[in-house]
Length: 406
Image (tube, rainbow, N blue to C red; front, side, top):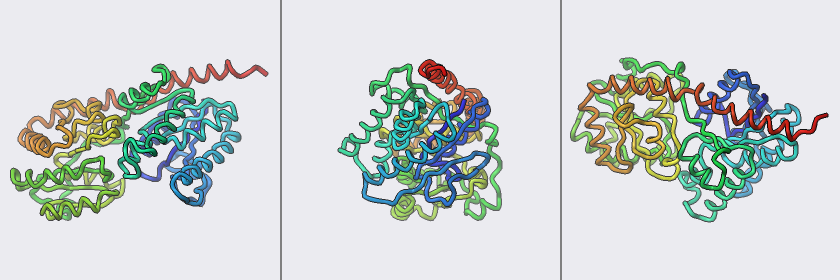
């Protein structure tokens, strides 16, 4: 089976999106399928029409000239469509597999219809909900409703829909898509790619000024929905209870400036360490400096519907964490068994849960073992990717029935 994937962006860019993509492609290849990969103009300017990254061959789309909102997206879709049609004619795939956002699905639908190739669409998050978090629209606005309508239009015109979690599956079915045309491919981890957490590197600990400290931390992109402002709001109260606490924030993103200013305003800037982005090969060393990870996501449609990768990666490394009780977390985390949940948006709940966990470190080894077992047995990529098999084969059989014999 030959599958041409249409992606928003890919490695070597680093994001949860690119890591999920790379894992899916490798597992699909392990199943004996031939995968081909096209990225949209969102990959950015490149001098190469294609490039090899970590053993995966990616075709690139041209980046069109920028223009006003609305026209920009139209130009991106046209660029993706032109490159996709060229590749589809040349590579002759059995299936076009578009990954969100809808800017990739619409070109795939148009090319698939012209060339008679089945199209599937994989929703990782809805474009309209991501736009709300980025501040480019508001829930219920005209743009929001128009974008939602585009997503629904695409969902109704593809041969099958894949998504990453039950929250999104229920939303998709609620839009009138038959249940038997929607399959969940859960977020997972490559367990063998994660080592269990080790002793903190003494030199790095000294460089970060963490000697003798108990460290709370977060590793990832600083988006508003991650709720790091809530963690900072809670920190002065935590310090009163435990003066030895320090906070380590590893990464960067749109909210970094706001978070630094907030730490100054709260008078805790000397106890909050912002490392900036660190090389991927060094991330594990920084993780090892953290005693307790905190994932304080705010409650909004995006976080209630979508499951993140971070808690699974933490479980794979045997790390201890507390997380807000948004829907995406509750779908992954067994409260009190693989991690702890606290009421989203509540400083008091965050403080209570963190202090309770720090007071009961004797429970941590059992929690570490339970988390690792969960990803080894349930949330690994081999198990998740196997769920593509039945829909793909059903689509292929239907295509053979539609195609007249020579």
